[in-house]
Image (cartoon, rainbow, N blue to C red; front, side, top):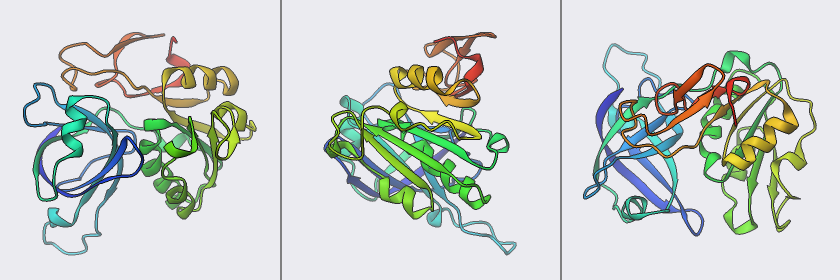
Length: 254
């Protein structure tokens, strides 16, 4: 865990209730599937947000990296007072951020044709994962699930990475009608997923347990002290913020 100051470089609305924020600061050590914990002025608890992407320039000299050129991208949904306050923060605001939190995805298990499944605000952590898998030469298939067309985001950003992208909407207003499980073909070498619990349960039932799941769970402290985000696994209780948020699908008791 690192505690650093980041500066907001952009904070833009991308759907009715979802925002994308880019922050300049020290992004070293951040892995796909990890999260950051942001202090919002006037709020007692920090806000845990999944990492969507990090951009770190190559450093071919002996000089230290310029943190002003390292960008952290997060995507968050306005669901309460804290995230509502975040949505109004202007460019240039300094934020106290805890980084390198939690355990991320294991890219070594991907195989040649990994499947990435994201639902709603579970989509953002799939992006950095997809980018790194594509850089490894993997044929990446992505399924993005939303309720309706107006909620869809990052479809084209995944396509720009060279991924095979399928979008599902519950009402059929965009892409395949139905749920993410309606777009499964069973051909993946391994899968990675993040999304709401009903989606996770349906995916595990349809696709089996040869994959990894990032659990969305309400957090208190965000670094393992309060035990507020504990879930049950085959190996006993585990904390989403500390032992997770990524777990082997085979160890989850849902």
